Image 1 (cartoon, helix red, strand yellow):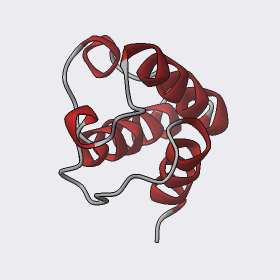
Image 2: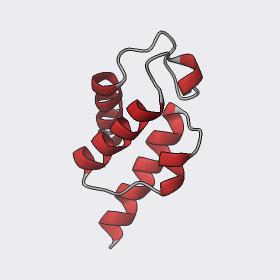
Image 3: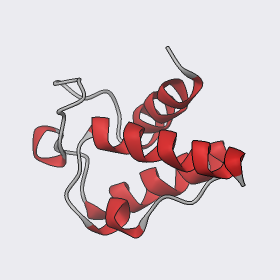
Amino acid sequence: MSTVITVVTEAFTRVVGEPPIWGADTTPADVESWGSLVHVQLVFEIEQALGIRLPEHVLTGRTTFGALVEAAESAVKAAEAA
């Protein structure tokens, strides 16, 4: 498992909890505790853990667990290239 996936998974479990459905396609609709405020906390936690900034659409748009991982991986690659 890549470092980014590990960090996002650990942040998700800390902030949201262990979802009953788990996978790349898991959405807030699948996890009762994954509301809008919790989503903001989750994004902040991922950013802090990886030392990155995620794109605004990750914060404001509907997303999936897999989309969070992909956005975090892209942000890490961009930060490494800079």
